[in-house]
Length: 495
Image 1 (cartoon, rainbow, N blue to C red):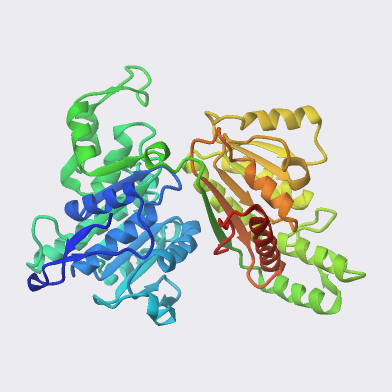
Image 2 (cartoon, one colour):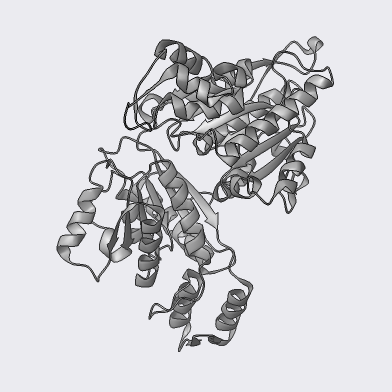
């Protein structure tokens, strides 16, 4: 089913919107509702396609001539994913920019994108940078961009009404709408319209939704959090932070259901489905130089000594270690991959998602374990250094979905066979194994008949390094495997 919308002018009658990639039923339903409401919230469980739904909603608005400029605000770590989603799902020509550079449009395959409306401009802004105290000039840049639509990714990050990000975003939306009203060109729902996207919208109930809805449409739940609490929240008489219950639940539920769509994996019919994504890692300049020296001369120097290789096989091993950031002895060369992993784990923790992290070398396992602990996960390390009993405890922690977000950091050899980790639906590859069997086996640990949610595999890849050739080799082996098994489905497509 494709949404049917009015064309660019009255004489054009009705135009059928054709998405670039197939819409699932829950996504199609969300697009239709969001088009009608203008301001809307997509509360889908992780991996159910919130970003695609938002982009198709944007495209329909653009087809109607209502939206030409779109601001996407999300965690910095998610912006690369948004770039990939734009190229994959957005059906029309577009230009995109962030605070540093522009891309898109002319670099895209024109034969696959339609010019049925003016080119759409996107601005991708990282939440952490945008709302930083010392970066008012960035917020002014967003206001100069003057978006027609704002997509707030991971909107639960704005659930604290007094937080800087929640305050600044709400006030910016307010100013932009006031400006449009002042120009006399807006009706009851002035632009910019706002789409909220979240997989974990309200762990504490309605109080977590207040600030999100205030950003989206302040007329729905009001603007003063104290008034909202006085009218709707009953706190413990002694422990004033503890919510006992809510008043006016029927009214609140009616408002929320009328302005949002909540979808679970079971409802969407996507339990046990697989999704793949990559996060790029930019190596420091000095490490790039070391990498080139080692690749061409079999030897390179750094502050910690000399890295050399006796033959091509050992050289490849050293290059893999160099990209990962650690020597065989565990000396740290750089933290580029660690920082990307840290940002992504913080995002998963905010979504209350458990995770399995796979690494090739023990120092990488140790680094991933340290990062997971620091982020706040209940963390386990599983490699050749731990006791058999500790390994059993770690595996048992994800035999089913835990109450506390849990992370297990595996070395491949210790976690690729005969175990079930369906309590997690997120797998991260800090580094990727060479062998298809090892890779395929690690993929299957979070899958199976007991997995009730879609699963996602995230690869940390440094462009222009052995990371890329490793993935290419796996893709080739995958083709052989799928041909032998007579299974046309490809897992690694697009990485």
